[in-house]
Image (cartoon, rainbow, N blue to C red):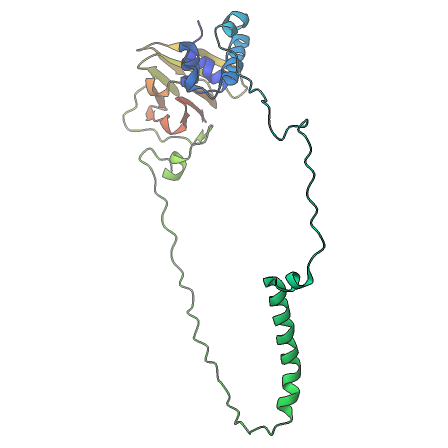
Length: 257
């Protein structure tokens, strides 16, 4: 009797993976090992014997290690030992020729200044070079852009952030309130709801059918978990609250203070 959204929230896996496992669509899962592990976890959570369920899942295929020419029992082939190096062939290598050219160039650079110093040097007028530094522009103080506020009073940057748990500030009371308690949840379809108070005591945990409503008037905070958030309407202090930005895999988690 446990809803699949509640089981997915308890196992912390997407609902679509549980649906694929239930329908036998193993190609939509990472591999058969993951499918068997997910089935075992679901059976443990539901407190049922996993053996009949695991028998319906094909076993994972283990790759066999075949023969290879480089196996440990392959015959050893000795490496042919070349004869003594030929000095002429060694000197004809490009790397050796480049090294010799560099050594000759270094010798020329070493003795060239001594040869030039013996010749009379012509007087060369010295020229001074003045480096003009360009003026550095002073920084202009640009006013910080104003923070964009969403229609419901919450900054837009916070609304778009996909955080699992968000504390909602006090929502100003609108001129025409819907009525009811501090927190109201109305189901437009089958939706799993869990509400706990500030001490961690679970106030409600069940599946709401289409048209069901629940109100909470005790002192906040409330920790709320919604399965199939698209099938639930949330009202906080008489004002409609959109829980979709806090949803992940169709499960929303948020906190009302």
